[in-house]
Image: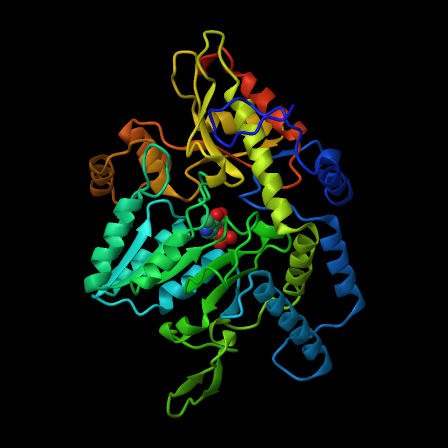
Length: 469
Ligand SMILES: Cc1ncc(COP(=O)(O)O)c(C=O)c1O
C-alpha cells in the first residue's frame, strides 16, 4: 500500500521507488562499476557519476578523427569549431535560453568570477546575497568592496533554513530605491538541498536589480527554463549534471545584460583587433569576449552528448525519481532510534519535500543528545566505502546559522587571528560546527539507502568514546 506524504514528519512511505526497472537497468548498463567495486556513493552533489557510454563514445570520437585548435578555417580546426558550436547550441536548447549567450568556462566558479571581475561595481552598488550561498558566490563581495560598494546578507531562517520572505522583500525594496543592486542566490542550496523559489528572480528584476542565479546544484535534477525565469547571469558546472568531463561549465548571460559587463582586460580569442602601437583594442561582441585563450576543444563536444543523454532519460523523470528517493531515504533515517527512544539523527531544513532537492544535511546524536563529531562519522563511513561529505561544504552561512555561531564569536576570532582555519576556529569557539551531507542521484537505489541506514545504526546506544572505526 502506497502512502502519499510529502513532509518530513509524516508516516513513512512503504513505496518502492518509481521507475525502478528502468533505473535498475540503467545502473547495470551504464554504472556497473559502482556495484562491481562495492562503492556506496552518496555524494552526487559533489560530483555526478558519468555513464560508461558517454566516456566510450567520446573516446571513440577522439580516436577516429583529427581535431585542431579552433579559431581557424583549416579542416581540423573547423571540425573542432563545429562541435563546439553544436555543444553551445545544445546548452542553449537544454535551458530554453534563446535570450542568452553561452560562455564556456572551467566550472561554475569561473562563471561567477567573470561576473565578479566585470560587473560595474561602484560606491553606489549594493551586493545583496543570501547567507545560503557557495563561497564562489560569497567571494564576489570582495570585488564589490574593493570598488567601494556595500554588501548585505539576507539570513535564511534558523527553523527551516529557507528564505525569510518578508526580510528579503524589505531589503531588496529598500536598497533598490537608492542604489544599484546586484542580487545573488542559489536555485538550490548545495548544503541543505532547499530549492529556493525562482520567483525571486522576477521580483528583484522588477525592482531594477540585476540577478545572478547560481544554478550549479539545481540543474542536475531540475528543469531550468530560461524562457520563464530570466536572471541576468546563470552559473553551471557540467560534471554535476552528467559526470564527464570535469573542468567545464558555463556562464549564461542574458543578451540584455551582456553590455553591462565590462571586461577588465583582453586576451587571445576575445578581441577583434588590437594595436600595440596605440595600445587600443576592440573586444568581440559574442561569447568569445569572455572565453580567454584556447577553449577545452577536445572535451567540449562531450557536453552535447551528456545533455543528449540526460534528455534521453528526461528531466521530469529524473526530478520525480530524486524526489521519491530523498523522501524514502529521509523517512528511513528518521525511524532510527536509540533504545531509550531518542533519535539517532536530525535532518535539517524544511518539512515539505517539494521544497527539497536530492541533498540533505543531518547531525548524529548519542542517547543523551550529544552530537557526534562529523570527522569521526566521515572517517568511519570512508572505511566502509561509503562516500558522504561532512563539514561546511564551502557554504559557511548555512553552518553559522544552523549551529548558532554568533556574530560576536566570529568577530572575536577574526580580530584576534591574522591567520586561521576551520578546525582552529571550532576549537577556539568551543561550539560544534559542520554537519553530514548525503546526496542522491537518479541511479541511487534502495540498497544504497539501506547501506547508509545500517551504517547509522552502528551508532545506536553508543557514546562518541565507544565508537570504533
Ligand atoms: C551551488 C553551487 N555553486 C557553486 C559551486 C561551485 O562549483 P565548481 O566547484 O564546480 O566551480 C558548487 C559546487 O558544489 C555548488 O554546489
